[in-house]
Image 1 (cartoon, one colour):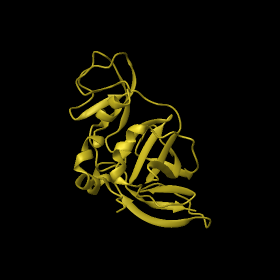
Image 2 (spheres, rainbow, N blue to C red):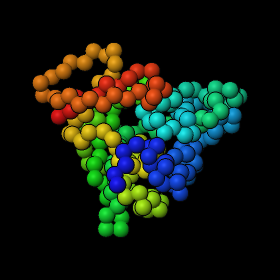
Image 3 (spheres, rainbow, N blue to C red):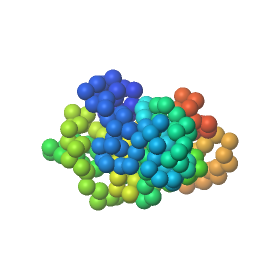
Image 4 (cartoon, rainbow, N blue to C red):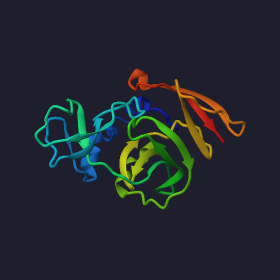
Length: 206
């Protein structure tokens, strides 16, 4: 079974639910992070996210400057984490021949002001070495992982739900988008059940 949404994955793999916990994940990989109410070590910019987000689309994520004396900016149920500045990739993995194999790789380009809002996904390749810790998830058969600067920031117990093309351009509500004859329209409406301020209407693909 190839699952494409987090709620189904949550219900299908109860033994792996800890992987939905993004604070636990960040701690597991040794990132500088902490829950709301725990002060940051130095004044700097950090990414703030919900500890759990099964609605996807980067709902609730933002980048803010935090001060060690400020214990109120990060709300309960959220956490702060150091920021990674490298390229953002989305990888689909399949368990084959007793190991994870990369079946698709896309580089994502998004807005630093609106983290949910990706402008383009470009199909590419990567030499990323999949960490052995993911071998414990082999019963899932398929994973989608998000990496920035070769560091895992999200692990999904399912494949990406996005269409598979060489170039994918999300189209957002109230944005002016020039539709070229070189692209095909694919409807795919999503607004994280209203938890992001702008609805994605679909994709231009080629």
